[in-house]
Length: 358
Image 1 (cartoon, rainbow, N blue to C red):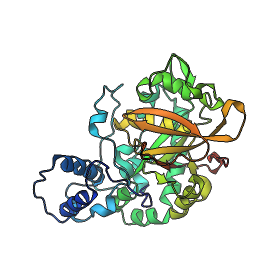
Image 2 (cartoon, one colour):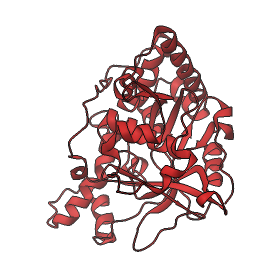
Image 3 (cartoon, helix red, strand yellow):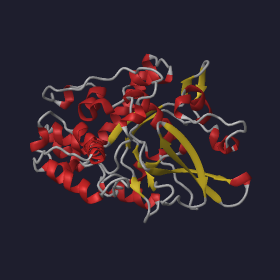
Image 4 (tube, rainbow, N blue to C red):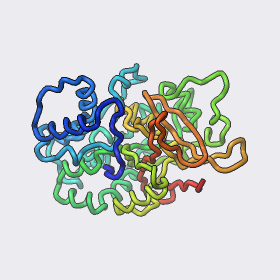
């Protein structure tokens, strides 16, 4: 869901006032050529996510750039030109007038609102190398219907549904992706889905292993698996945790959306990495690759003793790094990453992961 509380980080390679003025000129219809190539480059990457969020061509007159501005720009397109692992079938966008919600299939309900950011069961089968039987598929679709029922009952969503206002609904969920977390994947046969098997199945998302094992390979969470299949609505605009801890930010996020707090989860390190892989494979872009130290609910003890440490993840140029430390990671001039948390919404309250205090 679109979040409006996370501050953006201006580029450090150009004058901030020039960028702000260029954006205002663009919004006011002043389209004089930009001679500064660096400014033009930065401006293009700032407005690209806004253009991508437009529900229909020509909608600029009805929707202001301020109302759609992302809270953190996506990574440079040059970073995404590396060889893709496989081509996953994208679902077509729907341009016709929306029919009555009751007449749509469960997956089509989600597709009308989230468009290609709804990752279907068929796409998950391709990505994970699985084949769901009829009873599994029916159960998974019923779980999806349950989550959609919760989302459609939210006051701000129900209002647009009643008016069949598709642009309004698409704007609400402009920073959301709906995906399916499954406890198994196919790597030389069906295997439990954990960090170990994800590294084997999707090596392009990880840094090459050093001669010595990575520190996290000795931790229990490295082989923890997704406990049971479930759908999750994931926000790829992070909540900045510089001034407030992740649990406080998530509570505020739930209150903003009139959701019971247990439905809003802080991701585990496994869920955070799984979501990045699934979305990257399905969309061929890395929505969660932002200037953020993504704090997770996963905790560990260094060599089995001492205080609990937080696990957090960073993604750059597709590659995902796993780190751990006492307390929150903070922004530094040498490493300009904000501490943040990516919320996810699930249907079952019992699925919420509570992070111990550290």
